[in-house]
Image (tube, rainbow, N blue to C red; front, top):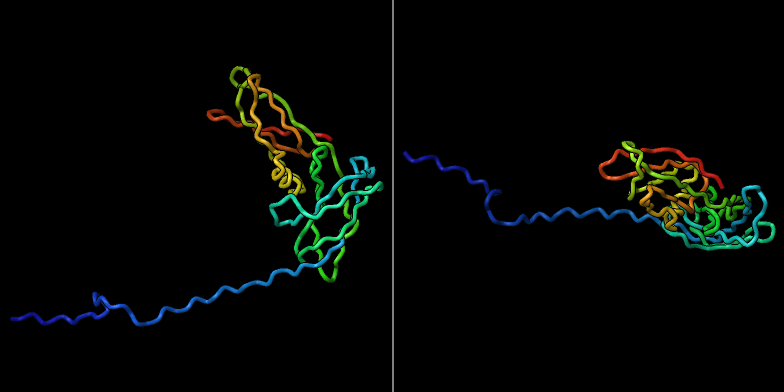
Length: 212
């Protein structure tokens, strides 16, 4: 009584490659780049009392960039600046002041297009850098703690200023010394949260006040 032969599945174990061509991939669409145009940018730079500041250099930066260099201009005796620069039409830009003796300041973003090739009435208000200083102590015995990392976070309304300050290296890591003391300098005036971080310890946050 011979067993009935099984039908062979030609798709299995044939060892042959399929002659069916693989489907072609649909190429991804290439979006056209924004065309460069010449934009005209102007405004004024003042201090905390709204007095004009002369001889201040301001720089034009792209909102989506990671650079701190770009076309620049200096203010006159009235604190005014004006210059022309090649920009990408419709892309967001802002103007910033990066001087070391002032806190970083930046305008709101704006766009320049062929329909609106100029932006005027920009205003930058400069403040002298603020500083935060204090001491870190143990909550157990009130003794100073050395080597504690001091972390600043700034929930500011102008996030561009914080981003530029970090690109410039103004938010440097700070550790408390042998007496538990620390000092953070070259920061824009505003509201900050200070956090003390040390392995094995529960951190504590507080909100100091800064001024220009």
